[in-house]
Length: 436
Image 1 (tube, rainbow, N blue to C red):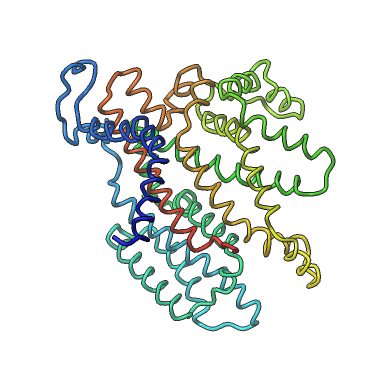
Image 2 (tube, rainbow, N blue to C red; image 1 turned 120 degrees about the horizontal axis):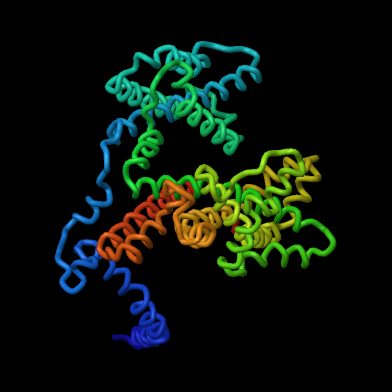
């Protein structure tokens, strides 16, 4: 070994020696519990087999996914129909893009009308599309979309220039097709959302998964939007800026138990502040803590209020890292405030937004304390309306003393979070703009 090699070897050994205490602590308190719980998920270990757990294979996972009653239609059918719905929503987006293109060019041709023809044909023939035909239609439409995008057959300038608006058009179109349009034309919807809604009534795990996903969809976008708005306001030259920053950040460092107890009083039906404000402006009071349909929105309100200050501070740090040179150049070009935000602020904030999106989604999937405090240890007022994934694991482990199946449920939660994080990273690689 050369002198240089010996020196590098000593530096590596020294570095690992410095890391050794941290690695030992991580091994004892993180790696070992994670590995042991994974092994435990394949064992039958409950209060009946406390002293002699035995190997159960995938029995715990099968038991979690077992339905009390059969679902209305199989999962693969819902998946294929959802692909069809998503594809039709994509053609609705193409139709809007083509109409914008026609208005700009003030002339049209047959190619411009293809997306609109596809959309109209779908709604005319909706009642006659069988499952087999839906699969064939989805494959054909996806192939056409791929070829059209590769060969620039369709004008997608509007989609590229206004990515977020295009995504919202696609999302609204998909939701309308999934929930509204089939009923308007006397059709039956067989989408993946319909499958999970039906499955949630016949399996507690799917109930927890559906409730948690609903909570994530409700909490994350609203929380991030409010945080960005607060950060934009605090980034201006306003008085008492330090006071407002502290005020927004205090809920984040406050105990969740204290926050839950305060909001429990605010949500009270008779003496709650929120219902008092509603009645003051002429609206009907809401049974926040007693009506099952308000369970997830109630928990979401508390979570947003608690986390919005932290997210706003992260956004504020991102805003202050943007060089003023960009805004000065935009002013010279005559850009207004909205154009500065859409062309400068929002793209340069994409790394910060991506970070907060990842952290918020993972944190939201682990919601538990808010439900436990607001509903006094119960999963909602009735019907398991507040049953979340972590509460489901807690109930299996702590109350039912079924450690093996609780470990299996925890790893299913890990798998769900892994899938969502993977999708976000794949999308983030294409939309996040890093400025060196």
